[in-house]
Length: 244
Ligand code: SF4
Image (cartoon, rainbow, N blue to C red):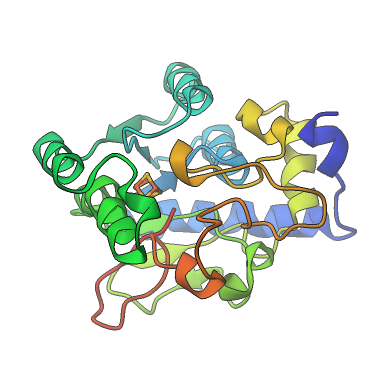
């Protein structure tokens, strides 16, 4: 059974949500340039990229290739780069930093402590994200309120940091996301068909069972509270921290 078969169920007010999202993206492109979409190539992000392309908006997309992505994700990246009207830029970690970290802490450092996991995320995600966002006035993410308790208050437009963040799918349900993918024949990561709702680096992502929390497949060996330390939690020192 595919993810579409399992999940595609539009909310009653889906058309209203879609119109709201389209309006927000059009406004973001016209009033907040330079602006870019951060894409992990997950279900939400492929929907946003599809909307950017179908609305012909001047919003480039970027992907962080951490060096630890699944083969299926890299294949989707290549397909997206060749099919997208909007440019798809790829940012990678500084190779020397990765080599030194792995030599010092080992290949499985992320499982040893939260500190080492965050250090790995910093080298492979946070620093490349900073480069991707340099010079941008605003960015777009696929955060949804439904994804976790920590994201329950995600606003459509987040102005709490120096750089405005648009979350155009904040109100969408998981069923809405898959309804859009189904209705528009959007290319998606086949790992979603293998019960991966949230897809990140291969060592830190697993499939979930029926009834498990949406983000249970990410950093599953850590406490729930520690998980939102990556790309999207606000840092009180006003630095945008990330946790894709
Ligand atoms: S998600 Fe895992 S492999 Fe990826 S950067 Fe973070 S700790 Fe490293």
